[in-house]
Image 1 (cartoon, rainbow, N blue to C red):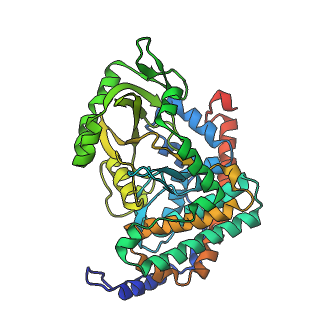
Image 2 (cartoon, one colour):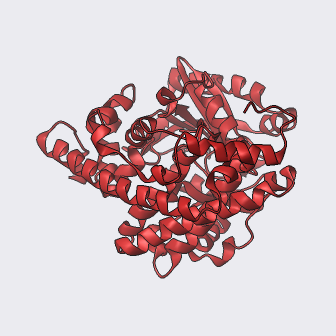
Image 3 (cartoon, one colour):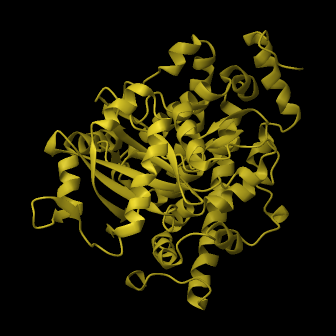
Length: 443
């Protein structure tokens, strides 16, 4: 069947159902570990080529904390596994690095707080199930990190997939623009989300100003030297970073460009963030708006090709910062007011606000029912992102009632959690043998 702009919703559902001939729903449970023809540690190291070598020991130290921390920093390994397996071919804009700690709260352009997927370094168009498999696996690993037994983790992963399938079914029956604007209303009743939103309520740019800067002796703030996590950039490097803001400004919509033009740059710094991003170039520019009490921080974050790109046949966006920005806008119902991209030398960068009142999930808050509650919300959020950027009717046709799909992807998540623990063991052995260096403070 060839899909056209005139294809009806019913025909698109049937097309999705027909994709079961390519890969059956029960077959989605199969990891096929014997077909794996790569060394996971080699894949990890190759993916980190081109990063700042001095920072890689810090990345690996953070990954050493637990199997879940390793999973967060090793998307390249899971991409290689997903890329070798058959897939439905039903494409959406993938979050790419879908896991529970890439869910968080932030301020929408109107100032209200929202909870959504919030990291799109790996975003690219690809099969919808890749996101679902990664998020489901993260629920298993994060659940174990927060003290749940495997049965409870498995139950939460199944609940997540069930929520995803139910939401896809509902979205396939709703007006398309209604789905695009969809907001989840029960977020405040889910404890881990409630706590993240409360942190967002309290977060202010002035707090970040106090944390990252000091006075230069003339009453003007400058970045403090907090190595190895952050420090000040000076001289020609700082001028090059500020110079890149011209390209960024030109990529903004006119009304947002006007707002940006009202700020003036004060200082430039470097900040280490996250786990998977450590080693990439990550600059922070401090701006001042209407006086010293109106600071604004822009993050200029290096983006490299998505880990999934080698396993996708169609060409992807050539500018990696633009890929990340446009992917984020495709998935989120509301995005950062100043989201954009630029280029510095031969590297591509995403530009966004560093602290637009962000709040993240604390794994310790997943106890006492928090894991399953978060899993249900994660399923709805991921389904909304896929319905915005793909075709809910096609995915609905493939998933059917969702019962078989939930069990198959639960089983895959359990199997991939076991595989991650085995890879984590190989990672720890590589550290002990000296093949991988970790920061001294983490030994």
